[in-house]
Length: 344
Image (cartoon, rainbow, N blue to C red):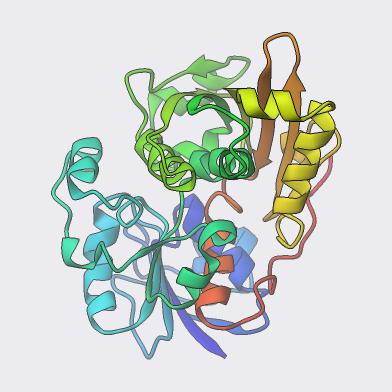
């Protein structure tokens, strides 16, 4: 039995980790922290986790095999520094171990990195791209929610060289993606019956998306990324556009069928990516660790059009972190994660 600690169980990602891990057959949650609820029971402040009878501590304690940190950016790396130094395997759900370029990190997160000495040894935790590296790593930076949907939506096309490197990503997220902290922008009266664009001067997930897409294509990718907030609790739907390459158009008579074949072949062995024959909706992934992808062709503009859909708190955060934990600890990758979506 893997003895696990969760740093910041009281945030949305932390409580989702606890919910899924509490039913994982190879895991025992033995220690949890929460900055605003020290001394209280988990099931007291989070009644939906009624069978987790742990007291929230100021620091994780006990003999641990694995640690998740669900603290905000910068604070997360600070909390994990001693964990990493001790040799305990860990996953950061914040952004502190995602970007490999220290200057890029410090620019976008407006802070010095708390432990840059561990940055180059960490692995970007997208199993569909880095499964082998994840299995050998002690430190994994869990991808962001927008990057997960975007990168999975584009990886087959970039690796197959069927698109140019000028990409537009239009993505929508439920309000839980903003976290549990109080904010006027996520107040009910502000978001209900409204859709708004944000991060137009640059969203923090953009360099993460660009880093990974450039690695896949072996070229410097041009990415326009526009996120939107929509009035629902969970879910991300990314609509992705990219011009088709001349060689792809020339060598294929049925472009839509060829694109479907490329995507289905690319993900045929992936347990949590489903290539669909029709456009998915966010409810199709609600509460699940699945990513649903629909690639097609815009014949009017000769562009690839991809719809990529995930639950931002599961495949976009806690579920993917547990998928990574399974890989790191030589546990069957799907274990604890096979729940289908809640629908309607």
